[in-house]
Length: 192
Image (tube, rainbow, N blue to C red; front, side):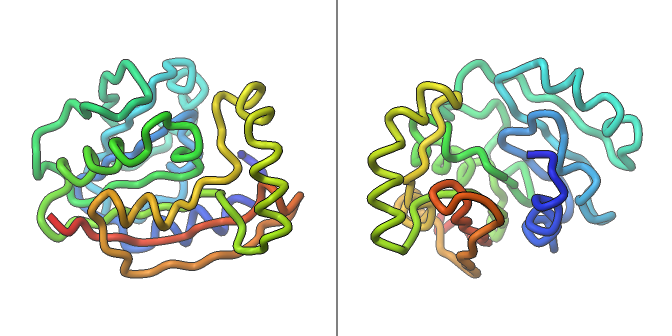
């Protein structure tokens, strides 16, 4: 996910992010160069500690502090931050692998301050019925070799069912095979 084709989507996702921010699925810090200067602090949440080592160079160049949040599972059942503690939350290409994305999103809603926004870019189920059929067929096999990644999640539906209201939503295909390149790019606000 470090290819140049991802950069414009990361930049779009992070427009308007400010204050104290929680990033779900921090990984190797690929989003760091795209955060606006209005970010005061980033809480980085990822169950894989290897990403921290891979992010060393990006962290050294980061103009704001990054605090790693201890997180033991992908269920998203308990983010170890206080309620109403962050101004924004960010998730890029991560909801596809979380076993219970709805629960994870409800937990994100809990830690967002009133009026806080959830910025996301995710791949998921295509609106094209032919592509969606192939996504359904291939997802069980794809999950086995890609860390649990689902090709066919309806990201907008999951976000809405978790108690968010969509402020902005765009669907586009990236370069590459259509079964894995259909994007959901959005901004949502928790309904409380």
